[in-house]
Length: 374
Image (cartoon, rainbow, N blue to C red; front, side, top):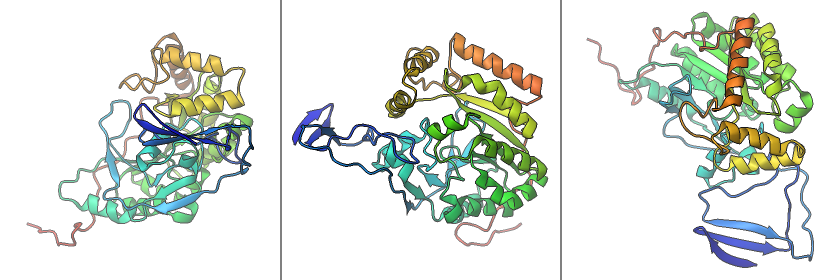
């Protein structure tokens, strides 16, 4: 074992346990690199003595997280909402491209396999939400569920955190937009359809590809493409306004499907559409490149070259106004294709259906104190 210092980190090289990146059953990431805040970094070194046997799968764990608040706010001009709630940290859908992966570093965990297998749920989310909605100064604005990780990822079937949040919002007549790629959202049609009749709910369904094999490699635990289109059809039948998010668009991998996805979604009942160019912040740059090289080695260099062309020569451009759409000729071509397809399909691209904020009824005060009515 060797210990040294590199860029302020303690680097520990452990011999006799060399484990190169590999595919794990049901996982998107191929490795578990340290987060950017870790003080120590362990690197495996092959010393020729033996190759440590690696498991074929990684077990998933879920732990409670106590949150002081559940509503997050943002003032970004790139996103169409000001308030959001994320019932979970980490996501078992294991999408290789997920921009939320680096957030696991704040938990002292890896954005790689840890993000997919070490999950956290906000066990008291409904109670915290009631407390925040009851505050005297609270101003009702639509809340988005699923801005960071999917609120209907597989563990929701057992934990029911998203369901409990929706119940509070329905009871207080608070508007909500759900963003998901899971068919599990149909479980809550009873709540969503009632809220939709009062213009209090809408759903955005994310569709990245219609290719089953590509989906299996890229989003191993997410719903199949046809299942997501079925979600759109059933939402329409239930009277819940819904749209499609082609997100992310990956150049030279999924971008050729843009028009096909929009056409299929419109036929299934989508009212509006949006798209987001692939983002690769922080550790995600290396994780996605690793995945791309493993699964599509012949086109990996081309994909990354196009990404850099649309990101000012870098893998990621965090600037407002550029991070979601990119810049340069290729990005402009994508934007034009999207706009033309939406016009042809009569898909609104300017935003979601307006939600009702006028009928909000706050719950009782957070401290249990009666309101003073004059």
